[in-house]
Length: 71
Length: 421
Image 1 (tube, each protein chain N blue to C red):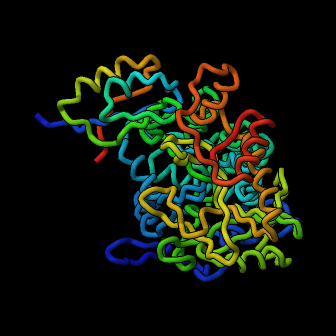
Image 2 (image 1 turned 90 degrees about the vertical axis):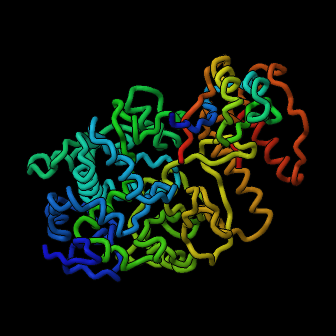
């Protein structure tokens, strides 16, 4: 089975700075002084994938996405 | 047209046009002359071989090293190959003549005085990319002349792909690629989040879409005729060819000049100040006169990275010292900073006091351009409307200078929005 390299991408237009994603995945997502997420562009390790999926599902604005990492 | 093989690639041989000769795009454009008609255009440049364009143009554009003149300087062949990968559905090519930057008049000049160059380039790109339709996206005042040119070509059945004109609304951001696509899809003409579905995959009508600056297409029209080697006759190795600059200053009429890439700024200033009909064209469409502002390619806004890593849409103002070479370095990111010429907005100012005045005016001008979708602007708007709902910054940003703080305060009071410089 081919391993997909996934990363998190935030839609800055939709994001309203709720900060749920940052709470769920603090290893990948930091916040700026106003509460908006700063997402690390690194690939998400397999151990964190389910928390990443939870962060994507629970964003109230559906503003964060899990995408295939471009090579 | 004769061809010869260069490194195993078929290359179009140059006609009687010399590579070292300026002007190229602005050939035959004299101050005060009427627009170049279809016959004059055909006489000067000759026909395009559509069959050869269909099969070889992408390779020719790659060999020429043409970069986009909309402001990002991204290689045109890379843009085209990304579109050409998709065969179904057939792509759409858009000539972007919105030119939202008020001090830029180069696209308007091309579209009114030499529309057939841009239309030829649009057709060449459409044929090479197997596009099903082509669109010219222009402001309302330019729609008439462009439609007339298209109607004339249609009567003579010159265009292999159907072309139509779409009217761009006024506004700086209307010329940004995703704003163009959004407007044509029926939405508002503001940039959108395209990382998930890039325009080259899904744009207008769900088709792969190429949004190309009008000037870039004019260069394509000449490359399709005369080939990559001719094109590389001027300019630098990294950035070949010529570019159009809109020059406006307090001491001369606003003009558009054509210079080879890599030209010295002092040469450009001399050129625009001198009354050389061969090189300069009128720039009647400059809606704002600013004190010497040179905009070689920034006719469309682009995304830049803001201070906290956010993508801010809009333009950044940069300053540089005169005498630097006008060039754009292409790094991994199209936002690469090149030396001290950080872009194309140049203000040789006589004194520091005047510098502050100009900066403030820039802030006010730019503040009007920012859309509510810009994240930093969204923060400002939210804090204006609902004070207290947005938490204050947890740490106060240290202010670099008293002057900067005063500028920002003045601008915040005036419009309630501010741009990130």
